Length: 263
Ligand code: PEP
Ligand code: MN
Image (cartoon, rainbow, N blue to C red):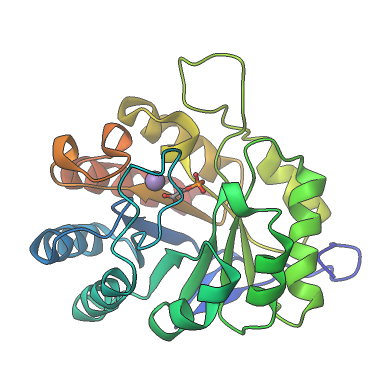
């Protein structure tokens, strides 16, 4: 079902009115975690003004340590929904557990399956039974074939609304957080009709590398760009070191817009 052979025309996924694919660029931005209400409003206002069309923030965080901030849970979902509505953007947030799909679907326009859960087949089956669009991130050690097979799980359960995301794979060099596999973008587009976006924030882990990788992703044909933005990275609850400041995001978004006009 995910293959280009079965479905030659590129799919366009509609996220509560925002289209991704077939020439429509998804501009997903927001902090790693849902945080304080006033901060969320400030960030949302600035990214929306810069051109973001979908707001993100995690309420259930898959952290390496069980002692690290785990997210605000349902209170975070509610806050994300309210902030997205206030600034006219649909929202995407991660769902980490099949038992949470129903609850997260009540608040979110799009369900994110994170890299660590890409092959959580119980979760894929559950989001497949929903009709909410799914943002499926490539696992850090997953091949492109693995990624497409995971999309196949969701599609085969009856949900055709899948957007893929290249967010970097494990490399050997800790100089960057992950290794940004830009070739995966045209490869996925050759093999599949599903849209694919890039996440240079998790791929590089370094704000100064994000603009170049975002531009490279778009130039390679990506259907969107996912970027973490925080107005005070030093106090961020998660992934502060890789966050772009709102003004840096605005500059990048304008460069991406110029590039998209040439493609
Ligand atoms: C995230 O989007 O904050 C996240 C945890 O991403 P990934 O699953 O790609 O690590
Ligand atoms: Mn993050």
